[in-house]
Image (cartoon, rainbow, N blue to C red; front, side, top):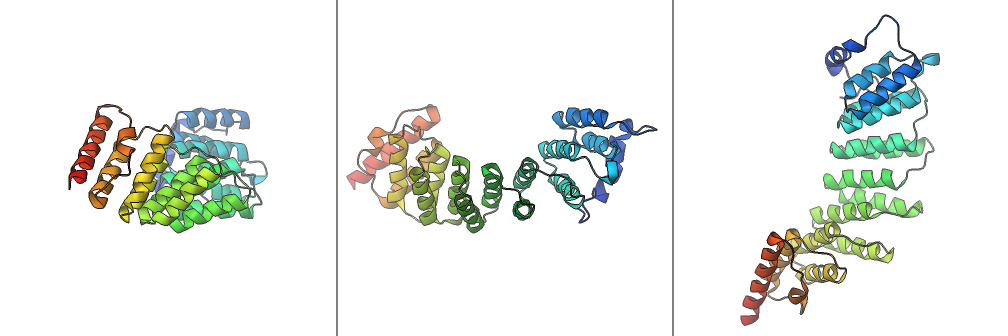
Length: 289
């Protein structure tokens, strides 16, 4: 649990002190030594040692060194220790030390990986309050955090903020938005996002197409699902097993296949080829009815 004061959570102090016992010495290390230690342990994902080195570093005027703290934040994020990431960001905030967009983006991404969409959005708002401009990476992490927890409306809201900020949303952002709509069974918004993706001249990938097909499938919009499958072929994308499964389920419901789709589907690896053959068999069986 993250303390509101931004200090290290008390529940982990004993482990934290034990892990950093080797770092303890009679006099604190110089800033340069501490900085090298934090960077070294950050690369090794030994987040607890990196934190210990940060705590042992000198604090001119009682302030934590911003560069050291950002290195420790990165180390904790790599180890998926989102609580500690929030704690360190809170410490930077309270000490009015410099926390740049990169540090916040790392924090948002850590929250996304930890399934903490509320904290991810909170960091985005704090970033704005600090008069820093979020970049596409920051927004994409926030959108993904909302997507993973089924918060499709918030995901779409963040995507609209990207447009308003005149940032160029990337494929990751759009895919996360489409996936969020898919989980909610909102096929209309999923298709709108897919169309917007094409409008801004981004090239769709298999992930986005599959999410769109699945969104249509949940609402039995098999015509749209198969249309996406055809677009995959036309875009020279090789459908995977998920794509074929979506196509097969739509055939079962709709009792037809758009002309030429099956014939246009490319052969792939063994599993994909098996899915293609199954789709062909369904097509043939339904045509005979």
